[in-house]
Length: 103
Image: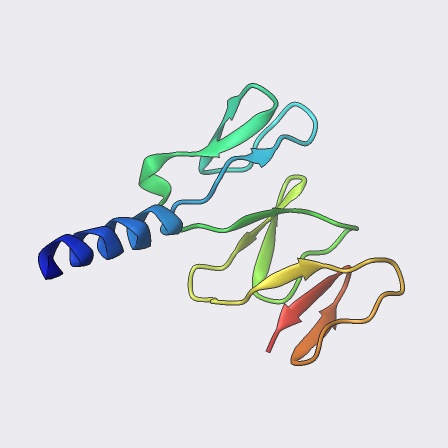
């Protein structure tokens, strides 16, 4: 039973590392992904990259620009949320452009 639970835990941890497809913005996808319908899907070899849609002209702290998207810098573990215009960030998060970034 313990072995079964350990296998389930490891499989769920691996599956959460791969990012889900993201909505395609325009005709192109960011590097490390490919077109699939109206979405961009990450290549399996891309590992645990995090890609978000760019909101405004700049990416949040810990991310860099890739076309209409922002990709997390590999050494960063920052979590981000889109911030509504003029909206406040939750406690323990700070504003970074159009985003809230977890401290």
